[in-house]
Length: 137
Length: 137
Length: 137
Image (cartoon, rainbow over all chains, first blue to last red; front, side, top):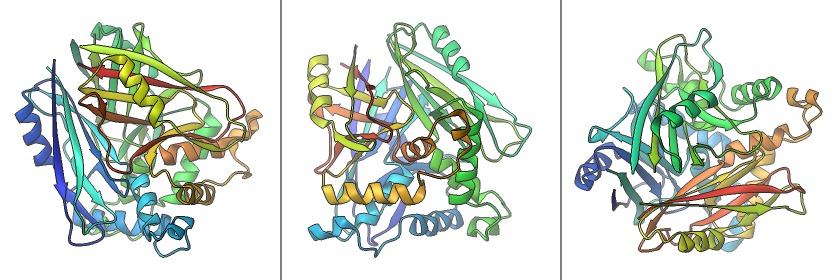
């Protein structure tokens, strides 16, 4: 049994930014030596998410407008009484999900035709990380 | 350590359809020989989900009406400029989740009294798959 | 390879209550002997969730108000024709998620600076459980 851990670091220029990380994850899987198993990709910060969906800029735009509608910024959130201004980022990352588990088969990510993994930053412009943990044989 | 992989295939008659797959997953777990571990059940297509909830037709109806309210079809989504018409399916599957990890204890799915696993199709009428990966001993 | 299973039990005084369980999970991880691996924490009841976010009472309040807005109680849900009155609890737990997988590195939960694990009860006042399954070496 093999267990292998690595981290991906982000420091986005914009407050909100979605970054494709499929190839980074695949590289970590290859370094792990695991050919059959699973890989956990999980945001270590509570205002960021990790999700699987399409790599199409129109859809990414749709996601961002939709999140703003369901979890608007600029409201009078109770969390803001602590001095923070990012309650909406906590809600948005909850809608998108903060982690995924990808299957590994034959040494590669066992993904469907359009599946791509993304890091979803909702409160960026600072250094944040994602943990990548591979398990299998 | 055992790792076992299988796939479930779907081709629903309706565009949107929820299909109970608990027994199919249990069958794959039995075939794997794993008696203590976990099983990942993950939709390989980005307009479908996998979720755990109640097997009650009224509640399934509630879920579908609620998803239509939060992520309506028929809007002027940017994704549709590519020729697609299914942006709402991407959003709906995000709300329901696209994968679950079920514990296996004593050779069976270690589920609570009402837990059932479902495949949630939001853009059906074509062949799509779910990957099932069992790990444990 | 080690696999270790335990259960956390809850019987909340209020219908809706969020309970921090990070230390309970850490204790189970220590008992498992796993120093490198993953732990699955999954609600075994379909009106409860498990999620990772900030341990800040204002934000917890924001989450609860937001869930009530997106998945209101008191509506005329089809599920209520069975005699139940908790359809909103099923929807709310779906928004928050019902399970998380936490990485274990160096014998401890490999969490970011503000990550805390919570049990989210949406239909409490009765005995319900969460399964905790540790895998690794």
